[in-house]
Length: 309
Ligand SMILES: Nc1ncnc2c1ncn2[C@@H]1O[C@H](COP(=O)(O)OP(=O)(O)OP(=O)(O)O)[C@@H](O)[C@H]1O
Ligand SMILES: [Mg+2]
Image (cartoon, rainbow, N blue to C red):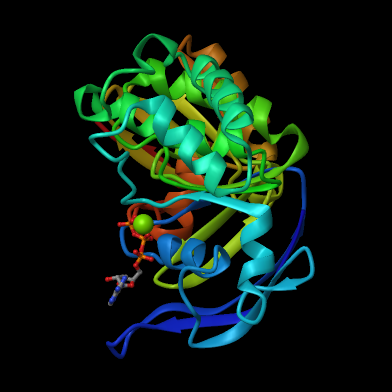
């Protein structure tokens, strides 16, 4: 599935740009995860690409079809669950899914069959004949995911599909999405950075309407000056370090580069101080990209000892 976005901007009635000069070109089977704070522009981007909203300027093509000039062609190959979508309360899950499939052109029989299968995959077969209004919030969300799953569209948009789901339901949905992504592109937005890191073959970072980056997690890491994190479970140590030091609840966190990791570890071992080393997570990267928090921390130059505690 090929998505080309060329200099898309969107201004609503206000003067502020909800999206500003967004360009990217993605040709992928897999998951494109879009992250960004509240108001960053995620939903606006999803709505433009799924032909629900016109941009103020710019162009976008989905498998060569122009989202502005050929929305009907685009709609034939996409399925979307908008952020605010709610399953119609007086329908049952099976009615919800199968009516959507019939609207997409399937026969009643096919729609029931495919609908049942999708509900089964999502663990909803026991409630398929209950009214949606009787389901829990998470189950209602899953009914909507079942509709797009059953649609077999090659491009699926899911705007915050896991918001409000409990941890186990989210993990179940992750497994399903990992399965679903094999032969299509799923564009999903999320506030759970762990989720974006696990699921995203590509990760787009939006901030205040600008696309700060769009690449895989390893390339994002490689752009970091300090791609490693050393957690030290001791606050009272004195040591020379080149990197960024943060106070965390149970000790210190040092962001540093590979060379320094090799220098620091022997010292920690020698002093018998408990520690762990990891590559920086997407939430660390996100903080570096869009939040001031980490950058405000003290940067310790080589040969400046630190004594924190
Ligand atoms: N219909 C609208 N009219 C005016 N402004 C809007 C409208 N929809 C969104 N905005 C503004 O556009 C900006 C981007 O909003 P958008 O909903 O795309 O962000 P988002 O990243 O999806 O946020 P969230 O994580 O809260 O869902 C915000 O400043 C928002 O207030
Ligand atoms: Mg949104």
